[in-house]
Picture 1 (tube, rainbow over the protein chains, first blue to last red):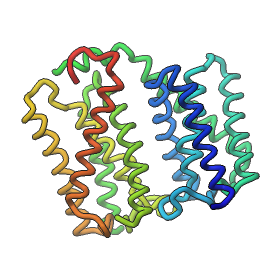
Picture 2: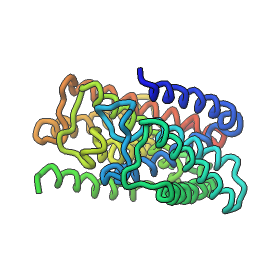
Picture 3: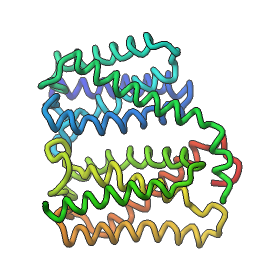
Length: 158
Length: 158
């Protein structure tokens, strides 16, 4: 096993512990929903990003099946977004600081491991990319939770 | 353009049109079903390709993912959202079983026809009944997830 595989396992362990400590205990349903919404958008946009060579992932979880980093983009970033949403303050500064942390995470992974390689991507493009996904996911989550009164009647059969 | 790309285009149009039959008051349920199904199928779809059980010779984003983006990311989750939204909650067990059977069988027949006559999907170590059972299980998992997700808000039985 390569060094990068140990890093992946470490990410999974840390991620799982953070998930249990900060997401599960706060609001599991909301945590899972926000993660899934973020996953949808990052999955969709990654398709274009990796198709056009902005980033690549030399070391991958399922090397024959995909070219993007599954753990980082499908577990870690959604988890970071979920933490952001569950503990959010309604200030734009908070979002920007949080995205900067997420970008720093990407940049460190890119620099010191083979889990992520920037092609045409730079740290500021990555930052803008993440801001974009955060804003879209945030709008969708807010829309979902704003209509909180709707499901009651939806459970009654028509 | 090859016939396969026309089929993909047709699937996108049909699936998008189907979204509009979802009643507005049940949209949150549809969203949760869609997201959860997408989460399962995206991951499992990649795993079965990694293990060489199936392949998708003609697909969107060919260099990024060897899974089927159209089916796993969009068409299948939407079909599951529709399944969950129109589930016959108040009817007898036989109607419910028939509902499961019909949805699963229709999707399996579609997949088998596409496998037989096009290059969109090729079974390697896979049979039609593997599809049938996996589709059935994912429908059931999604419904159970939705039941759990909306438990707090539940009035009638889902």
